[in-house]
Length: 239
Image (cartoon, rainbow, N blue to C red):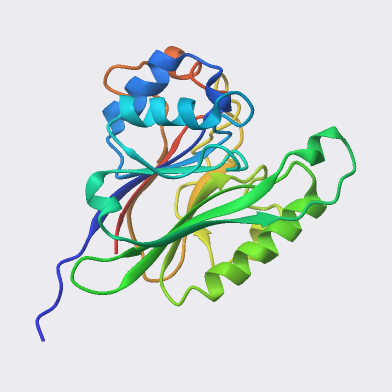
């Protein structure tokens, strides 16, 4: 049996601040990065969420796999080549203990199972952990169950709302790990001092590059800082 060719993917995860920032900078950043998959947090949720997400996808020539109305602020955008590999997709809600106004934000896990050309499968997911540690731990437990039951390598990108030493992140280790140097800070975008956004991977995913994005060919750091309150995080992988 001949060995299959590896599949290379560029994945970007980004909290888009519900498209309240500099949209020209946001679109140009994604156009410059040319990701195969965009894992979105804080997609438009209340005002024309489906139309606004579709608008963004058109600007960067990507398709909406998940997201829009009822999407809990999560979305997955992808190229036509990736769309052709979709086996199934879905959104799982994550229950939250309501303690204040911030804890009413709906949380979930948006996941897509892809067929790897030449054989095998991979699961790609977007998620956004809560501001409250108790709710983050609940979220991490559900995410861990999903990944352990996937039966395939997994890639999870998101706004995790804590650094790698946080309790929820530690609960996910070593199953899901961030391969970037932890000084690749993502928040706040204007003066990043913490890495709370990352693309995590399981065994079976070969990471070729992992970093925060501070500027692109057309978008200098000053403009990128105005696109969202978070910086994007990029991962180049082979599966």
